[in-house]
Length: 194
Image 1 (cartoon, helix red, strand yellow):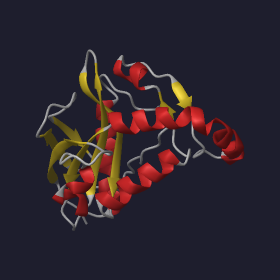
Image 2: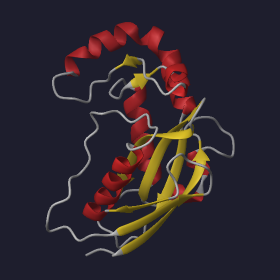
Image 3: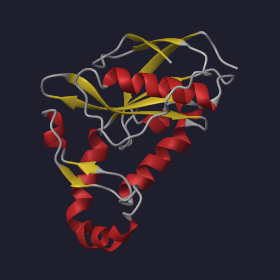
């Protein structure tokens, strides 16, 4: 079913936008599946995690979904300058939660104002990818994602409090995860139990 010990090595930072060689969509790892981090450079705490995600499809497909959802107003967009100071000024709260799809006209009405902020927000992301072995199933990936999210929430972080991560059950086997990065990310390296 799973592993008792797992080593994750995050590669990055990569960008979501631009045509430079550091663009995540130009990396060979982008065709694999695993755990990914969205991070931001901050003034005082270095590279700080904003989101922990997992995917069983390719990183390429999942990150494309993130771009489309953000550009389309479904995901939250915050002021980059506030995030750099470990604060958050939400410019658009998104429409991904129940009962918010009625905000579409508001998003369209504000699009000219929001578009430059959305572009700046996407430009500021630094992406880290940790491919996982193909035999690791979705539930174990999601438990690893959840354990890492809880870990990052212990220190300086920019993670939204309304993102839900999988909760462990008594039937889930434990897995010790050693996570490290090829570049400095606040909170890595770490050892978590998933």
